[in-house]
Image 1 (cartoon, rainbow, N blue to C red):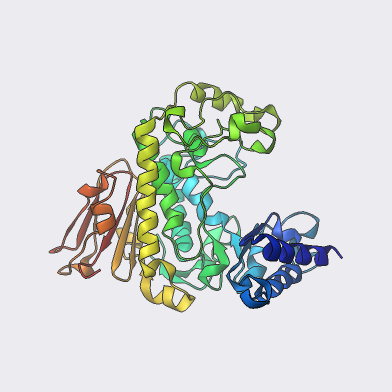
Image 2 (cartoon, rainbow, N blue to C red):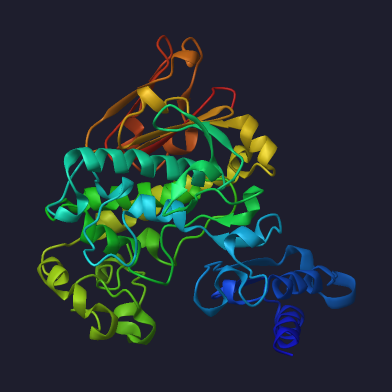
Length: 420
């Protein structure tokens, strides 16, 4: 009867209220059969009969595997691995953790990742390990992000940072396969959602404390780009492009507007420094939070600049069909990481996607990425960025003679062939 209530309620919301998408909290605690029954019921809705095209309604959810139902103990769950091939997306935590660093549950929130300075811009946290350990973890994180950029495909074949030919499923994520999707629509890319610290707050904990406001904004855009420029669906929390902060509150469901408000006017700030977050889920982090809340500041130039730069990336994603390849076979054919292995730069990911080349430079220095196979061919900075809002990315360049892409620090640059 509970399963029937779920199906009937969603059909009612779709028909009577025209809700065009549904997200399931703890979807892994639902039977897979129940979620598939929802999809089947929605697919049966037609404009003529019901006033809505049910096939266009989006379904996705949290496919976590834990608790009393873990490992299909009571029924076949709607978890990440079990929902592969259904077209119903599950949140992918793989690239999220690699981009941010560590996990949302670290006792020390200073554990760094690809977009928060691991190895290339270290902070003072001893939890990051030695320099050699940081470099090794960063390169592994880059492999996790490559899998994420493929749509988290289990069978996607690529060269990893060690120079080995591997599949997405062969990349380790805390003892589980990183790649679990059968098709790009099976995994949902994201770097922050309503749970845990917002992206800005996570970066506040992880970036070196003296990181400038402009560099914080650039790393925010770079982190968001790893999801926005991936295959399959991507999500960003409302206000993340505006550097939204909840003043380091990691569980703000009961924290009121004081912490949760989205500040649409940059003159009001971004919400950071409103005070120590509620004790319930945050008290253990107060020693880390106190010195940051009064020293980290961003203003209108950073807030409006980050939002505009991110919207430029969204324009590229929605105007270039290469970012929406519909099958695993097409992703395998069109997507590659030509500088993986011995030529890989820690803190830089270079992705070739058909007639596009994307360079994610998360380091504090300008980087050159030479792809010898492209020598003699012609690329240019994508017109959206070349005429866009970010003055820094406009200095990115390409030298055809050697096939070298030069990208400024803390920048994502998209290059296109001239006929694009």
